Amino acid sequence: MSKLFETLQIKSVTLKNRIVVSPMCQYSAVDGFANDWHLVHLGSRAVGGVALIIQEATAVSPEGRITPDDLGLWKDEHKEKLKSITAFIHSQNCLFGVQLAHAGRKASHSSPWKGSKLLKANEGGWQNVAPSAIAFGDETPPAALTKEGIQKVIDDFKKATSRALEVGYDVIEIHAAHGYLLHEFLSPLVNKREDEYGGSFENRTRLLLQVVDGVKQVWPQDKPLFVRISASDWAEGGWDIDESVQLVKTLKQKGVDVIDCSSGGAVKHQKISIGPGYQVPFAERIKKETQITTGAVGLITTPEQAEEILTSGKADFILLARESLRNPYFPMHAASVLKDDIKWPVQYERAKLHP
Ligand SMILES: Cc1cc2nc3c(=O)[nH]c(=O)nc-3n(C[C@H](O)[C@H](O)[C@H](O)COP(=O)(O)O)c2cc1C
Image: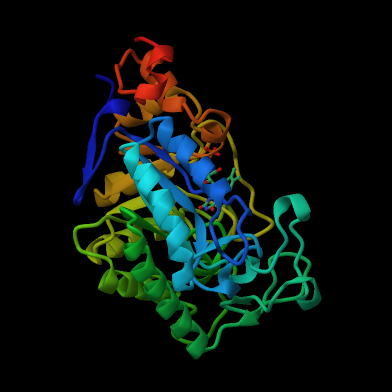
């Protein structure tokens, strides 16, 4: 059997293979509520045979949304539809996770197909917040978070975790990547604070560690906790892989189970060298130096490439984003290519590709 179709045990959950759907914003919610788009989109990928789907960046507070169209878990009413989506995904023998997020200075923007522009109050926008009052681009600066504001962020992550538990997710992923709030605190290019949340490595990592502590107070010990990080800002003087390794050692001690290794998004002047598997070396180094379970993501598009990443020990599983949009049935196709026999939904068996 290929490595891609080996199971992976993380705490109390067993991934039936090593293929995970990466979180992907759909910008299709109203007031944070999921609807049938989310059911069909996420459900299709469960039917396609992945082991775990991580739901898109889901805001812990209204002001933490990237756009007015983001999913949320800031009120109890959000749970109902998410519970029915969870039930369907579980019915397909697929695990379901949620990525809890706060967009920081990238909040209050329009969706990509509406221009990704900063929204003013009269356009449905709100005051966005960040470690420091520095804008991402050429737009009105965010408000620097007060100490009370920081405490609210920690509390919001904790409350959203309680709701996630009630919804029935198997995994929580804390979004600390892509230039959103928690990453903004990590990055010395974005965080210019002079209090205990800025300056030294210890201070810049404080908020993420406090959020992890808050989530751990609510999330059961036997359920996996993932953190997605941007392992590098790809910019001089920015957050880098050395700091990432140092951070992950502490996250591991605090009981984080998995690091989902992404990169970039903190600053506009980043210079990313993009190519197939371009972020895999980050997963490899973090795994090697901390022995934590890692997921590799970014331009992984073929079964052979995925298999090589796993057999060479560079990561423990792979996450697919755009390839999964192009082909929700990637696992079925990959099993045929790698000559593995996997179970298909009975309804689809007459079309089964044989290894
Ligand atoms: C439509 C779309 C939405 C995305 N939304 C999120 C998100 O909600 N959270 C996140 O961490 N990354 C998000 N990403 C990034 C992906 O999870 C992934 O890291 C990135 O696309 C690289 O993987 P790929 O080359 O397989 O697409 C998004 C990507 C796409 C294409």
